[in-house]
Amino acid sequence: MAGEHEKNLVEILEENHQIDINKYTNYVHSPQCGAIATFYGNTRDTFDGKTVVELRYEAYVPIAIRCLNTICSSARSMWDLNAVAAAHRLGPVSVGETSVFVAISSVHRVDALDACKFVIDEIKASVPIWKKEVYSNGVVWKENSEFHERRSEIGKISGCCKPKVKVEAEVATPVKNGYCGPKVKVEDDVSVGS
Image (cartoon, rainbow, N blue to C red; front, side, top):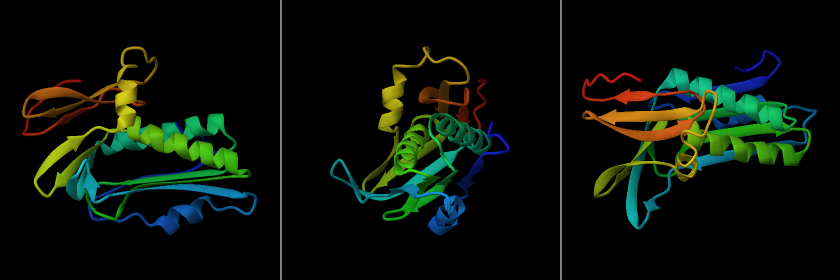
């Protein structure tokens, strides 16, 4: 959990709310800091030769917020950071729009740059946010490459890092392995215990 002295702003934005880049950049800005590192994750127009229409994101918001705060605290334990801001949208995100944004300030650029890469990689690997790619000719749920890299670690991770499960039409499949314990997503009114 984030300490009271930590300056973090983490948000999961509900459907149809765009990310206000200036809000998060201004939040981390400080006269004592010489660096602000940012990452914008934007919807691109193609993937593997297929035309992408939009991405659609779903999340279990309370755990996603807790995971984001844990990631921010972990980054602070490794680098000397002033402020951290991270936001992720839910719902449809059209081509060219930003779905995830990270801004980090520090006295020196190396800390901000390294921490920014760490934070976005951890978001993609472990936060319970699911992505559906909508193509001109179909729809596919996607797993991030960071998740695939972590898949081999399932069962080896101690503490709160446990596999997450997504359930659709009574079929359970592993979705993410991350910071905040088991997560079950249920669709079609199917009840599954964690």
